[in-house]
Amino acid sequence: MAVFSPNLDNRIELALANDHKVHEIDWTDVDEPRLLNKYSLLPDSLVIQLFLNERFLFVRSSASDGTANYNYTWVFTRGDRTFSRAFAIMSHGSSNTFIDVNEERTYMIVINDQAIANYAFDDPSFTLQFDQN
Image 1 (spheres, helix red, strand yellow):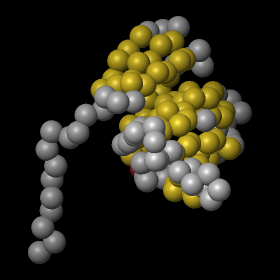
Image 2 (cartoon, helix red, strand yellow; image 1 turned 60 degrees about the vertical axis):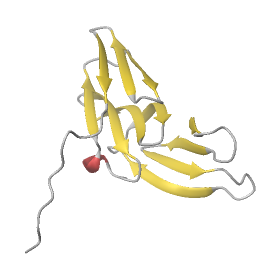
Image 3 (cartoon, one colour; image 1 turned 135 degrees about the horizontal axis):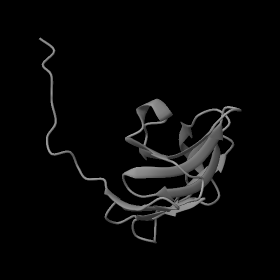
Image 4 (spheres, helix red, strand yellow; image 1 turned 60 degrees about the horizontal axis):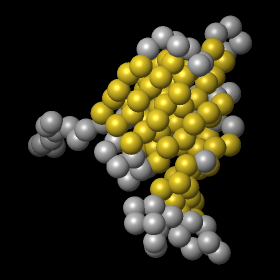
């Protein structure tokens, strides 16, 4: 489970994992929680860690196809609900992986038995807009 509140007062959002799906819930009104988004991962995924901030949902998961194990961190732009639309996907060579996120500045550290790495998720330097004419 991950919890996000920008002001710790009048807005509370949760991310909860179930099988290969993650549910993002607005729990500001505790009597009437509201489903905001449902994210899907690879089939047979096991969610290991969740982090949530204003812009992103971070999901560390593992999956197996019967012959190999896959360990990934998925970074979803909030609202982009399928793994094919993930903002970033990081493959980890080991299941002994831990991630931590500075939720205010959107930095992530990845620690495993192979390396320690830092990542920053910044706004794009430029964007392309295509004219429909």
